[in-house]
Image (cartoon, rainbow, N blue to C red; front, side):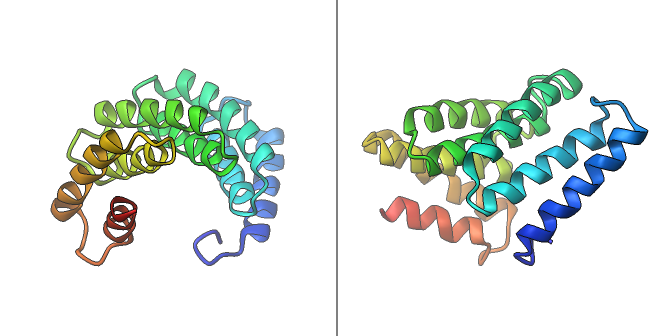
Length: 167
C-alpha cells in the first residue's frame, strides 16, 4: 500500500495488524516490531513526523534488543530516524542518526551494498544542509560507484544521489 501511495490505508492496515498481534503474540515478537516500523513509515509518508519519530524511537530500542546493534533492522530504523529529523529541520539529530545508520549498515550489509550507499546519501544530504560541503561531497561521490555495481543504471538511488551531489 505504501508503494502505491495509499498511506492512510497502509496506516489503518498496520494498526489492525498490531491489534491482532496484541491478542496473539508478545510485544517483542519480531513480526510485530516490524509492523510497528511499517506503521511509522506510513505516518512519515503522511508528514506526521512527531508520531512517526516516536514510533521509530521505540522500535529502535526493540530492534536493538531483538536483532543486535549491528543488524540490518537497526540500520534501517536509524536511517528512517535521520529522515524524520531532517524533515523536522533538526539537522544535528539527522546527522547523528545518519552517521549511526551508515556505520551500522557497513557492518550489517558491507561497505559496497546499495543500502549502505543509500544511507550514505542520506548523510551526504544532511551534511550539505549543515554546510559541511567538503565532507558531503566526499560522501556523495562514493555512492554512485556502489550503485553502478549493485542497481540498474536508471535506478532512483542513482538519480537522487547525483542530484544531491549537484546541489
